[in-house]
Every structure is written in C-alpha cells, then in structure tokens.
Length: 555
Image 1 (tube, rainbow, N blue to C red):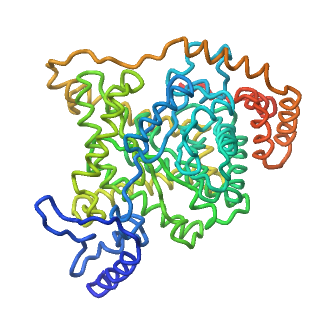
Image 2: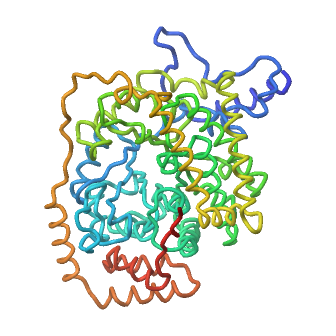
C-alpha cells in the first residue's frame, strides 16, 4: 500500500473515530505525555492491506475505530458452585466489586442434562459448578440481579437449549421483556465431539436444536448471541494455538452454513455468532492468534458466505486465561501467569475477559482468590494505560509475522477439513473428522509433543521442573459440602410434588411431538419449562425421540 492510500485510510479512520463516543478521560502516559489513539506508517508499507486500521476491514486491529478509548472490555468472571442461592451470592460479590457481566459455570449433572437426584449424579452435584434442575433454580440464581440490565454468558452445550429456555422464563418472571435480553449461550456442540465430550445426542439432532435456536433468537431476541464457538476447550485439551484457531473458526463456518441452510440472512444471524478463546502463556503468539482470527473471519464471511455488513463480518470474542497453565506447585505463581495471559488478551483486542483464580487448579475458587482474579483485570484496565491506544503492537515486525504465520497455518487446516467432506462444505468435513477421530488425533499428537518437551526439560515451568524450592504454605481451598446435594434433592422432590403434573406431562408430550416432526422446538420447550418440567425430564424426553450417542472406540 503506497503513502497516498495509507493517508486515505488514516482519514477514513479519523472520520469514524471522531463520530464515535469516547470515554471522558485524558489519554496520557504516566509521565504526562499525550498519546495518539492509533499509530500507523507514514510512508509506503505493503503490509497495510492486511493490517488495516481499527474498525475497518479486515479488522486485524480491532472492531472499533476507538479501540478501548470508546469502551473497555467487559470484565466477565466465570463462577458457579453449590446451589443457586450460593452462586447468587458470589455473583452479587463480583458485581459489587466491579464486574461488568456474569458467566455461569454449571455442575457436571447439569452439563450432561441430568437432574440432581439422578443416580448418575451421585457425588457430583454442585462440585464443578452450580446445580440447575428447573426454572425455579434459575429464578434463585438471578434473584436480585436484573436480567434486562446485566449481560450473562452461559457455558453449556449439550443441554444448552433447555437451559436457555429456563433463563428466558426467569426473565419473564422478573417482568423483563424477552426482546431486551442480551448475553451469550455457548451451544457449540462441534467442540464437544472434538474436545470436551459433553454431548447428549448424535450431531444431527444437536444441529437441529441449534438451528431452531438461531431462528428463534434472530426473530425474538436480536441482541442475544445464541452461539459462542469455543476454542478454549480445544486448547485446554492440548492443541497448538494454530489448531485452536483453525478448529474453532471451522466450527464457526459450520454454524454459518447451518444458518444459511435454514434460509436465514447471514447479515441478520451473523452478528449473533461469537467466540471463546484461550489466552495461553506464550504472550506474543496469543496476541497474533487473536488478530489473525478477526482477519480470517471477516474475509470468509465476506468472500465465502456473502456477508455485506461490518457487524456480520466482525469476530467478537470472550477470552479466558489458560486453566491448563496453572500449577498446583507454588500456586501463587498462578497470579503472575494469569496477569500475563490477561494482558495478551487485552493487547489482542478481546471484547470480554475472565481471569482464572490462583487456586482453580486445586478446587473451585475461594472468595479471596476470586477477588484477586477480578482485581488483576482492574489493575490492567485502570493502571497500566494499555487502553489508551488501539492495537499498540500493530506494525511490530514480530507480531505481524506471527499473525501472518498463524493465519497461513489455519488456512492449511481449513483445506484439510474441507477435503475430508463429501461436498466441499466445512460442515461435511467437520462431521467426517468427528466420525474418523481426526480432530482427536491431531490434538493428542500436539499434547504428546508438549508433554515430551516438558519431561525432557526443553519446556520449563517455574515450580514444576525448575526453581522448585519454596517457602509456601498449603492453601485453604473451597470445599462444597455433600449437604448441598442432599438439600438440592429434597427441594427438587418438593417442587415435583407441588407442580401441576398434568400440565408437565402435556407440555412434554407436545415437545416430543414437535421433536419427532419438523417444527421449531423452542416454543414447546419454553412451555415445558414454564410448567416446571426439570432439565432431566426435558432431556430424557428428547433422548426418547433421538436416542443417545456413544463415541466409537479407537485405538
């Protein structure tokens, strides 16, 4: 790009910047030096076609011309443990301490679509997240928290749609118009088969549910994001940064193809897609990954899927610092790791962020550890001044080279996935890759390579295989009492006894009738939830229609 074209781009950026609202503060260094809102080349730079300006295609440098001068990222701490009342107290603590949004962690029975009193739930209720059995639990979870004003993310995929219906019903009971709701539902079933393994049915019924949800949200809740395509769990399973990026965006393209197959307008449903990435410990690689992700997504949405609007081409993403990087040895070192990873997410332009607590490698976060995790974000936001300049590393020879390299690796993986399919679509290739175990094999090989480097000492981790002497004392960790499970089951039995069983049976029967046909499942599922049908009852009714899925054994 020559100097004249660069100057024209700068003028376009300035026009957008000055018509956009900005935070009322001075933007100076600690020593008082005024800084520009963005920096770029003064002369010819052939890289600028790929780098661009903030708020301009291909969005390498961010979605908004103002960067964080317009709005800082949302502090969205992931939390959930015990029962709904206990988690509600933690949410209120997070919001009172300055959190900007909520993110719900569910326990394993909920993630698998089982009620707390299911024999298979024994010993797991409330231990890795909050137990949610019915809409009354969702009422308690958000008691005193206005759902029309707070954005909420829910990290769940297999039973995501019935959990979403419980969230909608909880909003209705608060008197909040459904159309005002704003937040994110994970719903990403592809990554379950690829990495996390928390599915209920075979892929096709899950895709039907997701398609129904996309249709419903596009029509009824335009600000709500019904899909958060997750690379986090892929990376935590052992993938490389390039694999995380490629597998995640490929899954996103599959959901775009699902929306198009339903006859939806990509410029209408595209803005409802969001992403969830890992921020790992390799500082510059992570920044490059986030920048490459925006550029790839914008190009594919425009050139492959026909998106015409900026919002449909935007890749919005939430980031969580890398749980897999935390160590049980010398756990206070985890505060430093988390701060470095959080800073990488911010310099990469994340839209919202969760910072892990120092004790999460051992147990659910204690209140003290959760506060330190929250304060980590606030120190970055309020003290470091990294929010002053959009994409401050843009143009760095190293960062731009890494961005290009990760993008090229991702494109090569996309081609492999498409080649596996029968019709050239990303969806076909993903389904074949799941069936053949290709994704699992690729991740396993990357994880094995990393472990081998760790054991040989080529990869060094402080407190684990180097600098192992310490004066630390054992941490006090949060323990969830088994009394939580007993009380949850007692309350669940009382709810079943108090509800109108005929209304529940009729609602479930109508839902299964639609599931066996072709209608949209969201309205009848909402009716079942309003009648206080439980999560397990709803999921079991669907299992009766669609069966269950077991992963083929592989050696």
